Length: 307
Image: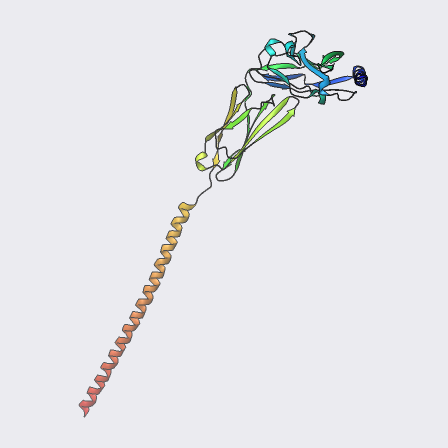
């Protein structure tokens, strides 16, 4: 037990004499009725301390966190201001120097500014010590947004009938713990959704729709709707222009039929000409034979008359 207190005293001594630093976004948009996540991290040259030996709180700037009503979040729930109870939580682990704060059900008076404070505690009862630090120079202020921003639609200039077409819908938000839902008024078999951090506190949710347009889709409206935490929605749309593939069937089919008919007629004519030619030859042969017979009979009669 003695060794434990000596170790704890050494830790507290080093912490109290070290320089503390915090990285907190100064200003962030917050959609009324939705949620917001305030990114926060802190550090000190004394190294990491276990989460069990740290206590974190968020309080109004210029007010002491020891008094009930001054805190929007506190490890001791009895010290949280009534209208913030059950609406705030810390998403990070203090032992990992993460003091990220989530506020849900945003109200139009939740603008702040709010500051983070860390305290060292001792014993299993988390008894407070004199070792603490308030980052009053690194506070956050919320910008109240009453209407959600419209999604941004990115698409090629024109679609081509029968060829894959891709449209992208994206929306910016500040609540990565409850991301907006993006939906299309289209077939949803081929949709890919991405989430990415743009910069501190601002995130983008992106929905990529791929489909093969048909001729009937020309001049059809394509709509993307974003639903935010809390139920608010916004949408954007554009008119799809489908470039038709040129069809020459109206020319090719009659031409093929005409050529086929002419070919059949030509073959028929050749066949008939050959047939009649053979018939004429046969008739000519028959006429020659009769003439020869008549000639022989005529000569025979002349011979008998002379005798």
